[in-house]
Length: 205
Image (cartoon, rainbow, N blue to C red; front, top):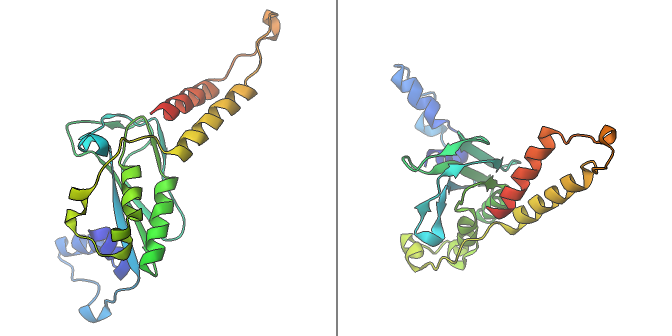
């Protein structure tokens, strides 16, 4: 995967491909290259691993990506994007770099926990489970790892569920109380209404 190679080599491979297509030479030589650290890529998919990786089309109504040192996100989706069942359901590539394999794994697990996609099912929890598997942590795995994997029923990420429940309660607490005198009734803003709807939907997705 080119993002992994780019992270450990410091070379923008796509930029170099464009240079070559334009008739220009490579901007580096073999002697300029060196490998440093470790990089891991997780492909975020709109799919349900518990149902044979069946695609999960729908509207993304809430979206949060990770950030921080050594974290890279390649994606073209935003809140409101429609995920069709006619195309590849990949939503993003989450890539991390670390000076050691252990640090890279820890960063990726944090990145996965900081990622939230509301409105559809994803493979976020499944990828985090793989990162915790002793065979993966030790580096003694092969492609057959997934053949032995027992995928349990997917459930929404607990942290995301708590956050959205708190957000819904907070919005309800701050909403102006309705009274019987018409002159003192204050309308709830559209922003708050939309926020409450997204919070409720996010907690149930």
